[in-house]
Image (cartoon, rainbow, N blue to C red; front, side, top):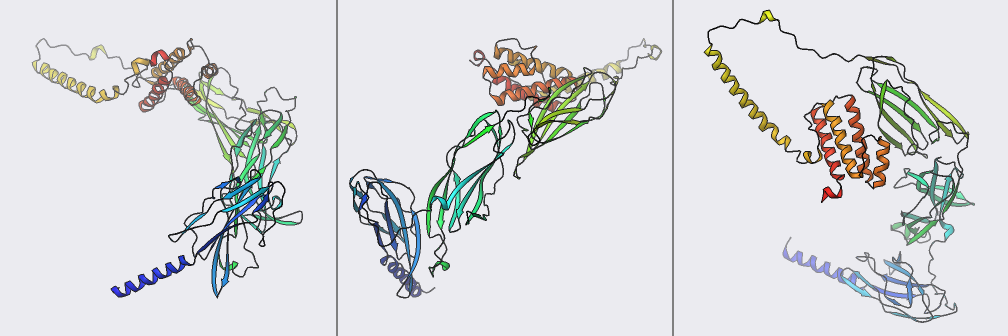
Length: 568
């Protein structure tokens, strides 16, 4: 571009910017300079002639004898036709409440547009006891009244049984003349006495149009949650409070409203749904003896794999309970097997489907059976009693297990006994060649042993604290490693608790460690490792890599179980 053309463009741009900033005006006003103590001061700042909004929303002005009711201003944008040209006006509105009778003061407000800073004049007011303020010629729009915007709570069922699933849904209703977005929960929301699981709600919901009392409204779901009352009686759910940005739709009578985007007025409103009181009914007293607390509608499945094993080999039993009940708080009864089998609880897992109007899930419980004798065994079916709130009766579920075929453990091959007749007669003449080759072979064995030592030396260096905790080496066989690891863990627990725990069950260990204050994640990890040691002690089918992993887990746990004297 030639230099003269560049200079001309720069001059034109500067002139346009100067013309824009020079035509800007800003003014501030209140609806009246004399107001009653119980009235609200509406303070409005209007920017006229700006083609672009200010760099940022202005801060509220400093005041005396006035209390600010909203930190962010309501914003109103409209357009007028002046001398054949469209002129934009921006209006910022704050509301204040008088503190006491007497003089009040609102300081200047500053706006920065296009590098130019504009300021309004301060305003003095007189506050009196009576409401004597007169309205301005131009009325100021008030925020949406409560009947135009409100929240409703729906509790289904309203009078549940203990442990029954209750779905609580909060819906926002707003008049069709409003626009609502960025709704967010304020503060904490407590549901004491309930187990709570969140259900899916769209982040960007599409409002649906409904009629309420003959008036058109739009509505969408703010929050949906599944609640499970853990006890009977009267329970309370806290109020649900949200903040939303609310805008009025452009005035259809304004001929320029359809050509410009953006809300005409924005309000930052706080809405509250009142607290909920739930009367929870106790379960009927005629529960079966083996009832374990399941409430809802369920389906039970059971499987065993493999069904043909040797003595001492593990069989995995899988129980799968699915439905819409209290899967997280119920207890599945273990399979009823005789003393021919050793049974161990291997763990459980719960998966939920949160996309529907109710919470549906699957609880998978696994057990390990270790047969002690050979034969064909018919496993008894798995039974579960549950309470059905719809029919208000106790029902029974039953799932069959396949028969097991257990064969004797294969015998280990024994080395063949050498025949005496196969031993050659020693030659009376010394064989010096045999001695030479024997020396070379012995030297090669020594070199190989040295190489193996250097190769495995870093592995031993990974156990610097093994002697402190008396842990077994992962290089031991599984049948020797896991019982010794179990014993080392129990010795550490004994030191931690100050009592001998060698004969205690896992449930007793859990109770004592909880009373001692052991953190829950460490406690659960420790119990899982103890169960693993028992299972693999009966069915030792692991690799050295797996034993190394269990060793490292035990080492980390034992460091958490050190007594204060050891830590010092």
